[in-house]
Length: 260
Ligand code: CAA
Image (cartoon, rainbow, N blue to C red):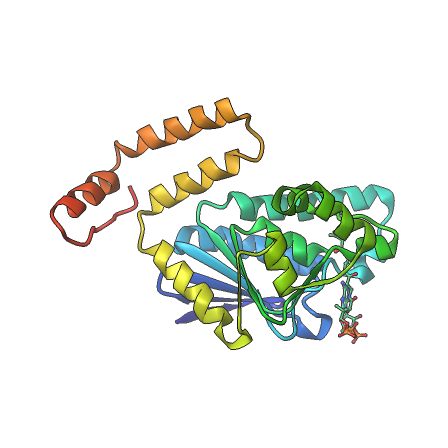
């Protein structure tokens, strides 16, 4: 396992899996501009070095949202600029070439919930808590919450959560489709690693194309999405990995993928 330390985050590598830990526990990993800058740097590195990324938090929070101290200093004009940067960061996670798993260890509120929603798969500890409490500050979610939450849980449930600012527990998050699995607290990182390793064994190019095709379902019409799927599917036939995958199946052996 190798590690790299920043000020607000920690980045560890376990083989092909990168583990990024938000590491400002005394402020419940509130996302300030320094954290966002370090996250951006880490993503650039991780996309080159790892096959799967796990994002988690240290202490009792995954992330308790944007840093309210910083928000208070903003005017409408610079808020637009800063919110745009936050939004772009989460878009970058969503569009990263490698899959991202959120291992949600505690509070995922506001920007923390938005960060989790930008990840591809969400695994929650039984003690995790979720919500978009911006309305209590006379704000609304500003990093994708009004767009990604309804896509995951439906419009009515998203309105209920965003308009009331209600905090929900992990079991409720599972029931409404905000997370994919809930596990005991002490199993969280093992379970996230199990899923990450399973994905890391596959062909990276097929994994990348599968993620791209599924992401396109957010914005494309069904006919366009089906065409896009067909294009990506056909392109895979020119890869070494697809030949190798099919041959290995027929020869009853483990495939050796190269990522091209
Ligand atoms: N920003 C800045 N500081 C925060 C913070 C945040 N979002 N959340 C927690 N903190 C700080 C607290 O101020 C406190 O600092 P001090 O010890 O220096 O006083 C420290 O973290 C510990 O927090 P609490 O004492 O409040 O811990 P608690 O266990 O009593 O409560 C909590 C936990 C319910 C999560 C509570 O901290 C809380 O409600 N946090 C704010 C949640 C929130 O409103 N998030 C949305 C932010 S806006 C946003 O995210 C906009 C967007 O869409 C991008």
